Length: 605
Image (tube, rainbow, N blue to C red; front, top):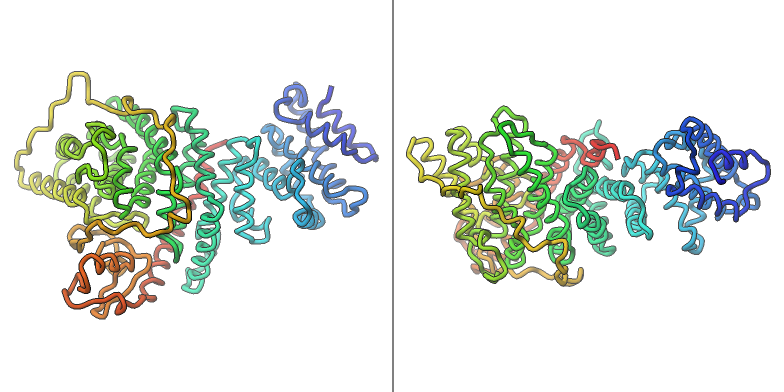
């Protein structure tokens, strides 16, 4: 019987392992044979694992003599170590021994990368990366991978994608670690020294790295690779596990970070996510649907037990959807077909969540982020570009408007003026990681609803009674929707085609200043009110987002939206000073918050 004790005894011999022996022990140490291989005594298994790891590292991986230990033998040794590291109770034994690895092994890894690829063995870099992820409990960080790859971010991303694409697939925890590592490459914390200030020159270098990462992710179709990994898991469950939460939030943050910190192709990136991948209309939609169900259960009872982490994940989902759909016109409007949670969220009773509850503010932010998404897809603006037969009655604009009015009257009014004012202010607040189209009919309608509500509460005027609730409880439609997990994915646009500009037929209006709060005005587009990506300045001193002002000029002719004077595209100049200031502020804000990559530490995988 092949056991860990027998492998330990064999390695005590001075005779090196033969290839057939390595193959044998690699097979016998697979996790499916763990009960037999490790035996009943955990302490004995740990002692043997320590001895085996020490011998494999010192006698094989650190051996400079390629005649005694050829490169392919080192790859086979890595496979055995990987199998041992997959058995959670003995991981610590292997982790302790890895400190003994010497420079000669690093040279072996580099040399292995220059040889023809062996599909049976794979690359040593992959085996080592997998080993490191396992022995760290799937909490390997991007900075560790960059050390391992000599700072080569592009190779590091390719390595993570190769592991994600591996067949048969690695365990889900390891693949989630790959996703969090890719997220880490987009984090300023992996580039800047937190003990030093953020300098303009450093910001430029960081954005150049993110620009390269954006181009690489487009070329490799990396987001779809990750979305496929998520969908495979989401389709099998009705409950968001901690692992699924971390994985889904990590890929959303990765996409949003690339948009925030890139200096070129930012709009193409958003278009690519919406038009060329299934991340929003399948993976994130399933995540939000299941979290919506979980939120309903959490709100039941007199003292709701709300998970702040769950609320933040849902809020992130709405922000992500807003980013993808901002000014995407008919493509954005069709996203409503995948949003049954809009109706259901407005059926929940939340007024009994006490204001001193730590989750209260996060819950308000969640709903405001949902309202911003409604604005971007113009959910209250009619059914243009949608077939009435396609959409449930409860998601029609007229029905959603009534549901929204009833929600505000039922859930916000009882909280008094302070609560009504807080919600209205939150609706108007600009956040650096959110794009909101304030020119849509939906945003105008929502802003008026909130404003009227606040004014009436302040004046103590009676409000119309909300629509009565049916005896069977508020009507929900999630259970009536065709299951997304079984739908045939819509034909997606090729990456190259997604780069084509989306038609700008949607009318652009100058945003009212009284519907914007919370951000230094110098960072905001004078036309849209959003934080700018590529600011340009007019001869009259106004700074606009380049894409927005060009669309305005195309729609309205050569006239300045602020002064009414003549303005042409040729007269606009890049506002480099404001662009540098915006990027510095955005990076500083990200640096001041918790490292998103560390979210994986919330859970013991």
